[in-house]
Length: 139
Image 1 (tube, rainbow, N blue to C red):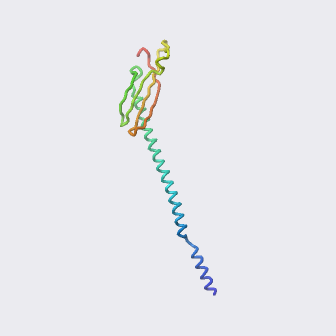
Image 2: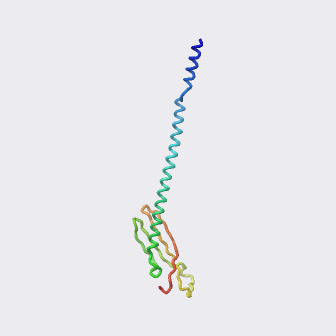
Image 3: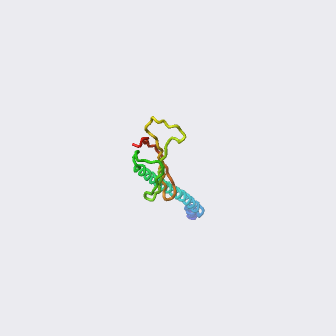
């Protein structure tokens, strides 16, 4: 009798050990949900990194165009355009003061607004605006 009783206890303990099919399915669904969330997070980070790289490329292109602008004596009003490394660009030079505003004639300097616009091949644009001083007498 003692032998059969201990045998039944051993069988009951063995039946309790391990996972049921339902527990295994719940664990697998939790793992799948976590892995899916991690995948979405990685994809978002990759998109953000590509966006930052494209932004920095446009910024470097705009900076190189601004450094290549003619000096203040040869800077002319109007628009210049071109393309550098697949990035179309445009430079607009205009007087900073509106034309209807009275300009002080004793001041030998005229402020010019210089706007550099650079587009990426995908169509995103960046504009950098600065002010350059030009002598009114053209020197």
